[in-house]
Length: 130
Ligand SMILES: [Zn+2]
Image (cartoon, helix red, strand yellow):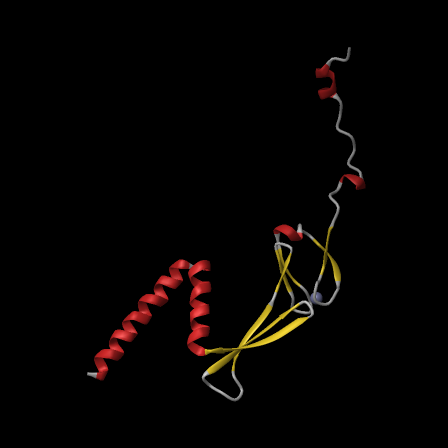
């Protein structure tokens, strides 16, 4: 029988190239470029040269909100994701409601601040009409 304490006295095996962790590879869903990255894409955020963001291994859509070119009552949310591109015309108050809804989930403190400021401005507007 081998003395288990004898194993502790043996020097560790020399580090070999195969002992290094394998590099991570990330393939951009938008442009198809594949690159070597330092950290696990499932635990990190990366931005490709084409501008696409991958967060926790999931491609984030590109979103740009711009005024409607013909009707100022609307804004246009331009959303592109992989090969999909869509323009959504949103009435401004509806768009603001969506933005507040996102803020209430992602940053409740900022949401409360916006709601408080909005309430003060609405009260001031009512008082100015008198
Ligand atoms: Zn890309």
